[in-house]
Structure formats: structure tokens, C-alpha cells
Image 1 (cartoon, rainbow, N blue to C red):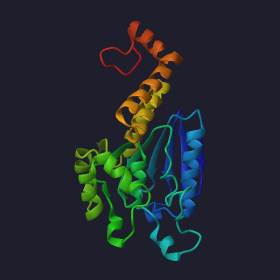
Image 2: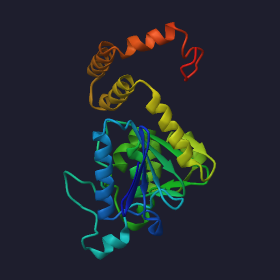
Image 3: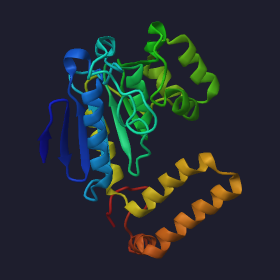
Image 4: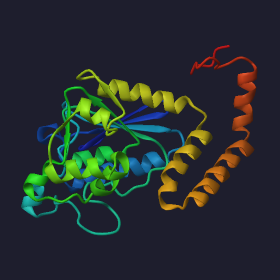
Length: 264
């Protein structure tokens, strides 16, 4: 399936949804119409049971330059929404998605573009790409989750280094600090992210989603409550029969010796 929107393109590859920010003429900077379109696409993804994983990337060999400051300067209908709660300035950055999202980063993912990348569960970054809180130099604050998700992802000390200085972060450093999960050759981030998405989509989904949900929920819970929630989610998976089916495949000789394909 291929559906084209003026600002955001979506293409379905079996159970994987490819989402493309489609404003390459402004390095995929996000104005309000783009934010609304991206929010709608991700809400539709979350509601569609035929889709298991989404991959977000930007057209024109760059991920996203953040908010469209030209639209902000205009102060008209294209200006990003500044209100709580509901739609975030960049659209979906207040969502707590129920299914995995992967960011495929080429070129620049800076300012709000970095915040969008932080919304993803996993990030694949081209070796010549750049991350950074570049909005520091313009007095534009982090209001799309950057000051919350960044320290949770890489720790407070490293997060403060990036947030306070606004410095550029190259792929090698981003990988070393855990800011991204994979690096690849220039121009290959989308292809690598789609392969990764297909791998996630092929796993038993009740188990994958339960484990993912536990990881996110534990931030707000004391240890004992977090362990209890993990156990409850795991037992629900076992009771569904999914784990029994997996055990039977293993007993039959499938997936042994670290193989991720069902071959005896």
C-alpha cells in the first residue's frame, strides 16, 4: 500500500509502516500542518492491528531540522501549537506509542528533529549524520520531550552536556553513549531500519509488546510494583498460549543455537 500526503508519505511493507517526512526543501522542518499530519499517521498506526512496527525517516537525505522557524516567525496558522495537553508542537511527541517505532537518521536530526528521534524505541544513524540540540543558539527551548527523554536514554550528565552546549554529535559518539542503537554507511539508514523493523515484526507479538510495555512502565513505579507489573504482563502472555507454542517449536528443533529463523 502506498498513500501520499502533501507533507507526510506512508508506505506499508507487510506489517511495517514506513513514514516519510516530506518537506526536503526545508530539511523536513515541521510546521503545524506537518505536525498534525504526522500525529494523525502515528495515531492510525497505533490503531491498525495489521501493522506491528513503524519506521520514521526524512526525504532528501536528512531526518528533520526541528520546528519550522520561518513558520514560527510568521506567527500565522502554520505556527506550531503551543498548548497543553493534546497535540505537541511537533505533533506526536507527547504520545506513548503501544508499538515499536524506529528512526532512520540521515543528514541532520537536530533541535526538535532530535526530539522526534527520541520518540522512537530504536535509532539507526548514518555514519556521516549529525545530532544536536542546535536550537540552543536561537533561544528555542526543548518542549517536545527532549529534556525528559534524553536523560532517561543516556543519563543526566551526558544529556546536560548536549542540552547546555548545543554541540554537534557524530555517529560514533552517539553510538558509544547509547543515543543511537545502530550505525551504517551513508544513504543506508532507511534500508537498515526496515530490515530491523521486519525482524521485530516477525517475533511473537504478545511477548514483545508485554516486555516493551514493562520497560516503559517501570520508570514511574517502585521496584516491587514494577516487578509485579512485569510478572502480570508475562503471565498474560503465557496464558495466551503464545509461550507454549514457542516452547513446542523449540522442542521440535526450530530456532536453536541462536538462530532467529524457524529452521529445524
